[in-house]
Length: 354
Ligand SMILES: CC(C)(COP(=O)(O)OP(=O)(O)OC[C@H]1O[C@@H](n2cnc3c(N)ncnc32)[C@H](O)[C@@H]1OP(=O)(O)O)[C@@H](O)C(=O)NCCC(=O)NCCS
Image (tube, rainbow, N blue to C red):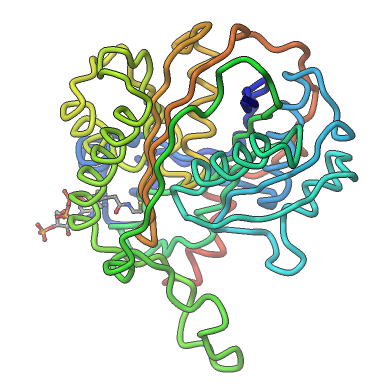
């Protein structure tokens, strides 16, 4: 049996930050409302493209695995905010990391995208089609934000995370997985005016993110908990076998509700929504990376992860970590310097939304 072991992990967090207090200067909101309703205290806004975020995260993951781009057979990029649609954004990441022998493909399952991509790349390794893959999730969700709408403006942020998968005889990596999509409710979370459905000569408005927060909240808790139950029984595991929960970071109260339903204690749950907000597909990739960096993930940890997003897609994954929790090497890859503050970066968009 071939497994797809995670041998590298990396992230790219753009430096410019917008705190809740700063946000309350441009939209009618306040730190108290945002932090108590969502758990978010700050978010990052990118001064570079989605492809650049993905590239730096992938370079860190490659160094961590002791590999270079030449070793890679597949670059799978999970994103719903691609730099370009045609050519796909993954092809630029492939070029940037020097993975010229690799296939390159974007995958869009919104916030569930990283777990969908992980499943896809794992299956290709297990089928013997490829040996090594970069699975990277990168988003510029702030590009979609309408800064006049307080319900959505406070929730989103930018960033990227990546893992390296390698064929291995060791039973680790993605050992249980369940993905699905409740398409009947696909309209309650979507981006308007984007794609070939729009009139390209007379667009009827900006590409805004529209959603029914309360409905999504309920469906997210139910969908993610049920998917976790499914994966636990698939992998023949009990709840107390789970060492770490790495959930999608959309709202701290959603995370706590899932945690309660799964009866998992605080010390086992990876939370970083306070720093980054909802970075869509990138939340789990970044959170997994930070869970290893901060020692939450230990050698051979049993990790449960769950996501929920537009579609309405959902996913849960059981990941068995390997022995190594430290990088083989470090990369000095970095974004170009950012000379503007977060508020300065979004100022043109804020003006356009007024
Ligand atoms: C979006 C979300 C945070 C809203 O929280 P909520 O507790 O459901 O809040 P509501 O939408 O019911 O709004 C409650 C009140 O706060 C107000 N409000 C909404 N956004 C606000 C903000 N940023 N600042 C201050 N007040 C705000 C509303 O106008 C409403 O006021 P009213 O009672 O006078 O009408 C929450 O529903 C959520 O996290 N949903 C799931 C996450 C999600 O949708 N993510 C999107 C993609 S994954």
